[in-house]
Length: 278
Picture 1 (tube, one colour):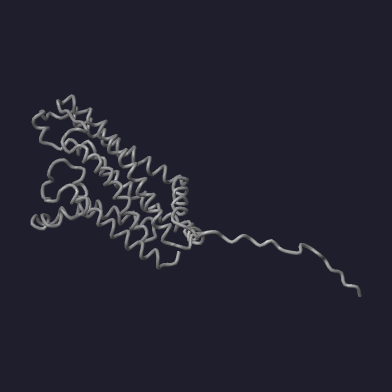
Picture 2 (cartoon, helix red, strand yellow; picture 1 turned 120 degrees about the vertical axis):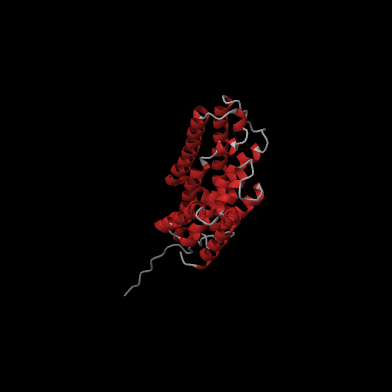
């Protein structure tokens, strides 16, 4: 029997060796692409802007046009903080945004793909945190400045001139955006810990909103010691221009206390993210 030899390529071209290792820059670009291509991000942040600015404008318009308070009486109110009071509801939308930024990948299973192409699993975690923090800060500042500039115009008819050059106004307006960004960071940490959207959102709303309400039922002597350390009360100092009764924390000290809550949530979330399977 004659054997037939089937000839082919004498050599098989080898695939080139991969150059370098997956780095943080690549993870950052990937997370930015993912978060801006998800429709829920646009809807959530758009809702935050419309809800916060709209509620602030409606409330200030109503107060300015239907209040019988004199100019002298209004001078004793923190109208700068009032011009941004929609932040109280805007923070809840930011909680949704921060939580969804990480829990949505667990619900869809996308987290497995992300970690398979990026074996340094902490790179996507810190990249995602940086992206959502920057995006929440930009949106938060848009909300704060838009609310203040729109609502300050309502008070001119009452003889109260408010501008960014008013005492502590710039601190309060910038602080409002920082507070909203901090709310998203806190929710992100909770989402990394719980890996469940409903649980993370519920926990974030509970810390920022429900706990503050429950504390109001405490005896007065307890409230004096507890209230100032609660996340909303502490963080709210940074977008106020007058001393808040029952609290001896300054604007930036209070904001620092608020960010400690977020830092603790992020650190625990990072530890669990590193140890647990996707």
